[in-house]
Image (cartoon, rainbow, N blue to C red; front, side, top):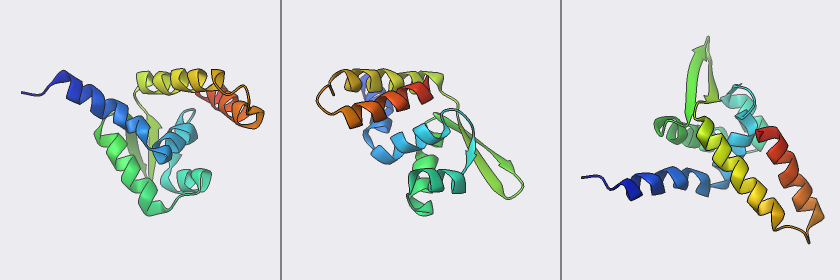
Length: 112
């Protein structure tokens, strides 16, 4: 029998990897191809593809083919809202680091 806490922990684990957070930031407003995401976040195509596959299997992202391109989009609005909530919480703790606080505020605006 699957424990509900195990399932919840796996869902939260999706947020535990900075690359996946960067991917979410890249596609939270519009769907993008793997190449566009790679360019946005500065990671390798192999690494981005691995994370996209994991997030897709978890049901957070959707994908569709357009010719030779595979386009990814966020399909789980709750996941985006969870990211936004955490960013707001972190931003409230960053009073001493104005540069980092500004970056988090920009991220919140883009997610919102």
